[in-house]
Length: 215
Image (cartoon, rainbow, N blue to C red; front, side, top):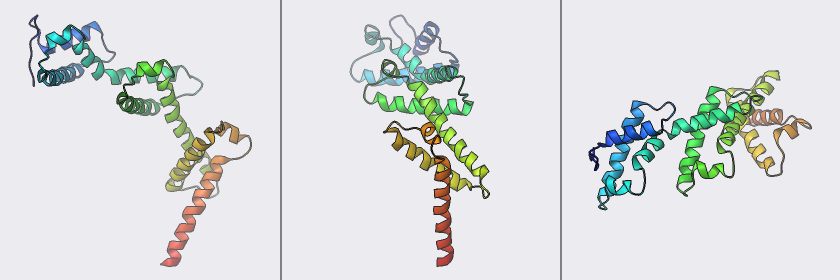
């Protein structure tokens, strides 16, 4: 690993430790510090090819602090998602929902970073953590609706049928959303989850019959 001692004779490990003490990260671990130190070393090794060292960078930015915050950012995202969940107590979210939403948020921000967009930027225009949580929970809720329909049927749907029906329902609702229509609106006039499951079951069972006939 690239090693460097700054003008005050501090090692990279010590610089990361200083950064961690200045801005403690909730749940920050020794592993986070080790990872941040390795990240800092690699970034400085790359900078050295351009004649830039940590002392030069210290004049314009806090790179050790940036590395530590970047490594612990995932914990920050989990906190943001948990906060979003607490703001909507009428809609309980499971730990699985929050974990999935945190992963979704992290992936979306990684993609956004390619365009120079950060979570701070999103915070000016939308609540992205809440959006991710609602999207993840909504998908689970759609699966729950399909399961409810399946349980009411004389012949319950198979796991394959329920998974396909959930995907169909999600796609249909995404199309309907472009017209300002959501599942709540459909519930006033028709059983869309039931229709999706029935359509999928009919399709899959017709296919199975064709295979039997063909054989």
